[in-house]
Image 1 (cartoon, rainbow, N blue to C red):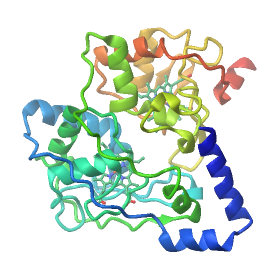
Image 2: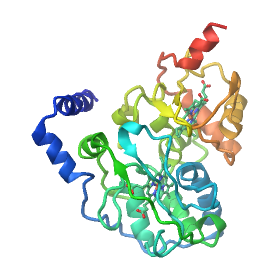
Image 3: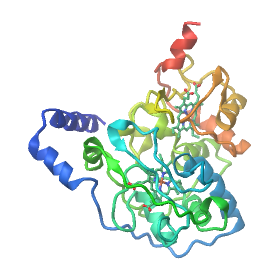
Image 4: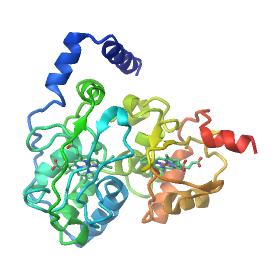
Length: 322
Ligand code: HEC
Ligand code: HEC
């Protein structure tokens, strides 16, 4: 991670002293393009199980960015909770509209984008998450849902807004926020009976909790999540929809600054309804209203095995002064 930090320092340093060559290079190259990923995949079979699972996953992992509250569909909107340092970022229309949405994308093209961040035209979509460790079955469920007959995915004729990336985002997309390669083999998920392993899968693969709950997006490690700086120790400075800073919280078992003293039932309340034992939880923490009891149990079991980090986040200070 030191290398990454040094790289960011170097980049910022270069930008600050306005190294004309580098800045000109980044400005001209912009967000890079690559060869479009071509996963070996035939059409996904849309079974009833996959459609139900796909709906649950899209609501938990895509809707906060792609669901437009006005249209009630996945027609996208500006993401005001992305730091303005990155410029203006707009989630795309991913309804089945043939012109503005993903109506003409094949299942394999969607899987390629979801795994790597690279679109079928080769353009790198730097802000959409890369679902590196999501199981093939869960990815298939998402894709089946996007192509199925439901209100959220029905064609919506809203044009996707072009991105307006800042120089910093362009620089990061060429260095520390690059796309990832397609998985080289099948990606599975552990079985429910191994609660700790299944909980890790939920946290790094299915719901990507570690992305927000580690120290900083820029030092997260998509391929080896546990190597992210301050893994699950909180402190990532996020924004809510009004643009106000909300710091992610420490969810390791540290008794003073983490959630070491929480019960499994308290974790379930917090995740499903945003009700923490010490008060309500607000955006951008998603509400995982469809989490099953088995998922809560697995997340709880896994979180107890994660190395504890002592890292106070703002709410700890508030509580301490009470
Ligand atoms: C953090 C916000 C965020 C989340 C969460 C997110 N996306 Fe995105 N997504 C974006 C943004 C922003 C873009 C546009 C990026 C660009 O054009 O550079 C995008 C682009 C896409 C595209 C490309 C569409 C096109 O026409 O280029 C697809 C497909 C997509 N997302 C699907 C998904 C799915 C499916 C999920 C959930 C499994 C998801 N995204 C979760 C922000 C998000
Ligand atoms: C988009 C970013 C984001 C994602 C993804 C996310 N969280 Fe959060 N989480 C937050 C933020 C921000 C807060 C603090 C909310 C506040 O201050 O109101 C929070 C709060 C929490 C809390 C309360 C901790 C405390 O000390 O009060 C728990 C527990 C938690 N998240 C667990 C999870 C789990 C488990 C997942 C995945 C299933 C997850 N979060 C996914 C951003 C996120």
